[in-house]
Image (cartoon, rainbow, N blue to C red; front, side, top):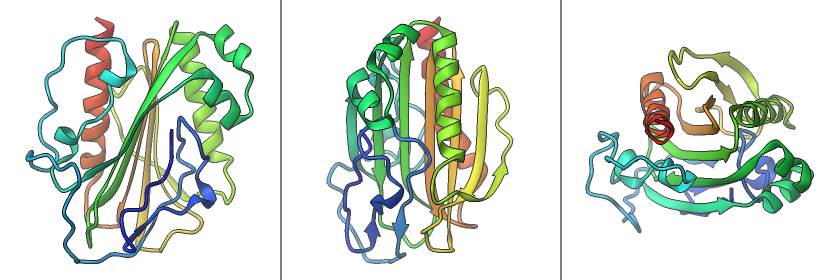
Amino acid sequence: MARMHAISVALLLLAALTLAGCDPVATRTVVVTATSAPVTPARASPAPSFALPTPRPAASAPSDLTLTLSDVGGSFIETVAASHSNAQVAATYHLSTAALRRRGRISSYETQFSRQQANGILQIDDVVAAWHSPAGARWDMQRVVSQLLGSKPAPRGIQSINAPDLGDVRRAITFRGGRQPANLIDYALIFQRGRYRAYVQVVGVTGTFADADVLHLAQIVDRRIQRASS
């Protein structure tokens, strides 16, 4: 559930574009004032930033497929780790719980990480939703994309980025939030792989990290989904 957690005065999560509740889509806007003040992570991992993905056994639960602190690096802290039921998603997005069940939704899991930095990636948010069939996961992906593009205020400067072989179907874009500082940029990578729908959003300081850094995170999730589907 996408509850934005205050990290410090230097990292304020603006709820104006956050769809409070669960299964976040890229309408979330993060307002950050860059600072070099040191922060002691609450749940820091000793792994370096963007370490190799932690080996995991094949699994089908969404909680086994999302990002961990070991994946994102020790300078981040985990601010969200939560599952989202059909009832929660239906209430948040004005959907029918019965319709979600008919389409085959099982559950989803979200993790979110933040850090206080003057540059680079500042926030990572990812969700994996499990469905009974690829058709349900594909429908869910289309729902998330439509919600992103139709959000208010509308995302500005949308541009597609290259994300080859990510999932069976994907939408990968960059954009700027309506109320974010001009030096920040958002990435949203939404994809369907088999009976799973995944969503990875990254917010960072423009020009201080690469598309490949974001794609790397999404690929970790995708590889876990592939193992779970094998």
